Amino acid sequence: MNPDAASSKDWYQVRLTVPWVVPGAPGVQDAINIGVAEVGKRASASNVRSCDIEVQDLACPGCGYEMEAALCTTGYGMVVLDVTVEVTARSLEDSRAVAKRELGSRMKDIPLTVIEAAPLETGDTQDLGRADLGASSKQHRESNRM
Image 1 (cartoon, helix red, strand yellow):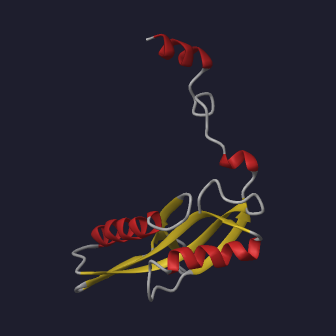
Image 2 (tube, helix red, strand yellow):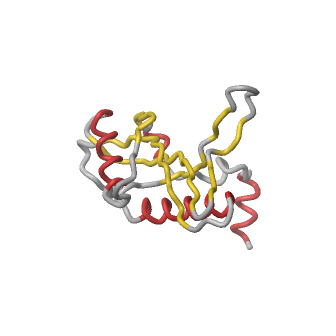
């Protein structure tokens, strides 16, 4: 949604799980790269403000070793991605539907599962200054002089 949306709507952060099938993937890392790129391209074409994509980690039930949720077989790869987006909605429940609608319209036949949703604080939506990014005010003044 447009950041200048009506004031009756608030910003929410919604986390979804997206299984992505990659036909013709030669290896696991290629399947991951292609899956993240495809989901990112489709999410950026939607009306969400920001999108963070990570490969979901799974723990082995026997030993507890964590690994990426990616599988590659002959001719196909599958990657399970965690996608976190920011959307405007009227309520927490509505934010889940908005996120699924915005992403689902660009990912036909992909089962999107909402893992969690939470309202964003007003401080979370503001741009970070140089001090927030680790640069001191002295460094900021010196860089402006040059």
